[in-house]
Length: 257
Image (cartoon, rainbow, N blue to C red):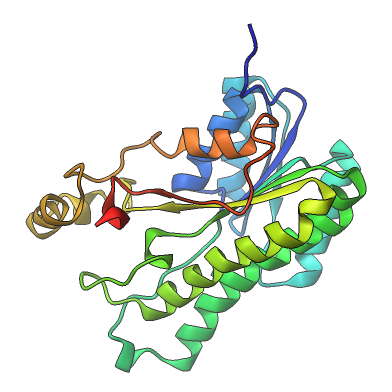
């Protein structure tokens, strides 16, 4: 029997891999046999994540402390991965931030910071990985983590810079897919809705957000741990070779209405 989602021997780089969805997706890829490079700013966190993944899934891991707003550090991180593993097959651009404030009160610094991390940061990593690893290998899977808020606006949590940056990630994905298809590099985006995590649980369980889920989400609930994993595995799979430039919402149906 064929396992369409076997990633044995492949090397996956995951940014923002210190907490939350980044760690969940890294574990999902490791479960399919991929070697994991955990990238984030907090050294202790990624070292702990890498150790847990190595111990649990019996795959090689490499934690790299890196600030994705620094081009030199991004290039150095990619060089370090290539020095250890000799290849990068998959990259998940998950690192991001989110300024919440009324648009009229957003500062220049907040807007710039959002763009620099969520949009330019994703581009920096994709550019370095493509140039140094994927284009020479004529193979790659780039998965950008955008947001359902990169596709629509919202009245619940005013976050215009986040909408702008994630909307940029959505169309950056299409642009890179069009450009790098000739190198057999597939570029896709996942647009998550609200997911439970230690940071969001209290907010999402509040009366206001529970009512919001009933009103705004066809499945009438928020995403649970693990419900993003299969989207990442699908887009990372060598078998998904004819899927590129896709914007995949994983939002309980939020953007269908």
